[in-house]
Image 1 (tube, helix red, strand yellow):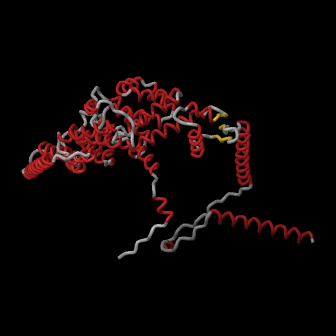
Image 2 (tube, rainbow, N blue to C red; image 1 turned 90 degrees about the vertical axis):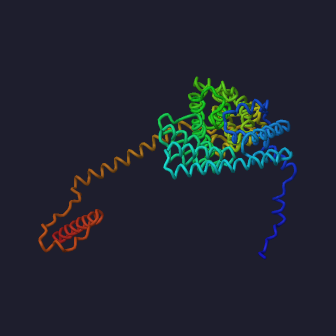
Image 3 (cartoon, one colour; image 1 turned 30 degrees about the vertical axis):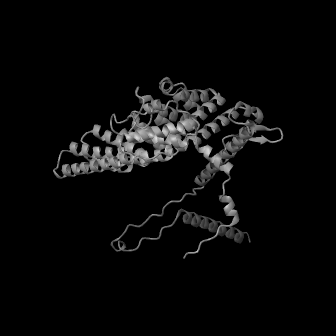
Length: 483
């Protein structure tokens, strides 16, 4: 048998997690945000595919710290899953609830899926063999993909949706393929396909839509390109209609995406122009999610305590979102970094204790740790006076910078002047390299090897040697005549 290495005591101690640390990790992953009435929450996602709606409810059931909300979400998930073919999600919800699984329903649903799958596969095969019209094959592949998506098999549905593209007979059908592929790829977590087909749809006239813009924003979010994601979410919320859903998420969720990513990545000028003072953005975001508008306007006006309080609520809300949950904490930390850096920017000296009092969500120790982190990253140009507990800005000496600039300009002028004088002296003494005249080529010289090339440096050195030799001979003649 192969040998196994025994772990050392230090390794075992490092792997051990204390109960307090385990609870803190668990609480960090959970969210205390309350979604309110569960039936109203489910109705908000009526326009979202069933598998995505069940996945969202399952996420709330797993990550909510409120026991009543967790149980309500899991029961709603089980009830919604029973309305379709996704037996896997139904079993997962029952397992988290600790309830028995309806075996009769799961068996009947599995059999119904198998029979539908065989029938649709036979339909696709017959239409392809008979050379049917493209529209018929396109619709057959679409029904097959819809069946797998309702089953919860997003990766398999994606394969059939991609095949639909070869049988698209119009730009409208091509856009519909892009929508289906983007939705299935987002559900499967294949963000490369999402970005690819969202970009293809944008190149088609009239191909942009709320679903594809949100999908492209989520793809940027997965790559941690938060500024690009904020722009796509803003375009989606501005181009959305009065419906509650855009196919992947509700417009309330998109408003939260747009506001938090914008505050985390935009400069103050961009935030003012695109969000805080944009009447279309204010109207759309204020209608769907008022708190999202509050965080954008508060960040622009410099009310950092209010910004962080509302951003914290948005972070807890997005922790229950299946798409934004992995990025909610990171976005909130970026918002905190930006608020602290902008607060310290205009001051020459800042008291750490007084500054921490301005940020309600940060105590003195946390504020000092955040300032040290920002100084290390280069976001704050300052140093900390540990004795007086102050932050002293490193303002550059304008007089010193002016003298340095003048000296640099003078040195550059002298260098150019020396080069110009050297060139004029060379021209005055006819110190110019000219190519030697070549004799005309005869018939015997056609096959002869070309003469070796000489570089400019060789010409210059030969000229110098000839000049020094002539001067030496002239001096020798003068000494001889004198004698």
